[in-house]
Length: 292
Image 1 (cartoon, one colour):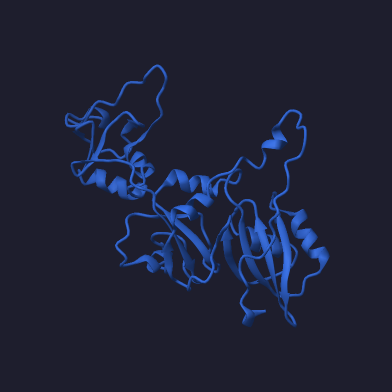
Image 2: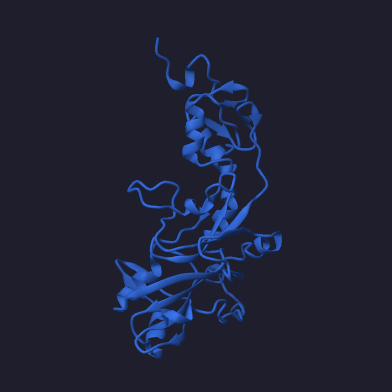
């Protein structure tokens, strides 16, 4: 006789709803939220019969569990939140920010291979043609706070463009443009150096959107020759060699902690005064001299 998944004899009965409706997630998602592995990995562990909920074996990756209430065990060991790990990689051009690429392209995990690291996920992304500072962490909640456009730190980029800029161009980048119904803008933009035909700009973003800088510059008919992320908040790429990584110390991780939402003042009923401006704007990274 076939049983529906929730009534199979060797599976626990799904927990009944509590009066206060404790948040519930599928067991695979709950494992990934603990930072023990990706959701895909967790689903595979479930299918392999390695996961129990409240002592009973489960076979369904979507079996509902209550956060902070139900006990999850993997290979007989109770799942617990591991110590947070954060590392920074100087991503080279040509690698995609994913675990496995369906087109067979090289991924950023090639730079971490053989190091014996636990499961780590990228914190945000850099596209294939972009370079520079990319974070990894095993703490999904912390990673979400870093990429949150309202409370996450600013991201600073050095961008080589195919023309010489003027003041009007920089003002236009800060004023923003609308592309396919989406407003794209730099929080700050300035010229770092110029050559005969090319220039390096420093562009600071308050939030990261898909290929935002490339789309913004393309809208004003400028091509990007190189794009390097050089800082996230106060954390700088510095002299970390290409394709190399290092662990962040507690002070560096703490420097990335979320700050009050940037849009909070816009929603206040009657703000008494505008918040003070940050004294930011200095370049954290010297642009490569041979590419100006």
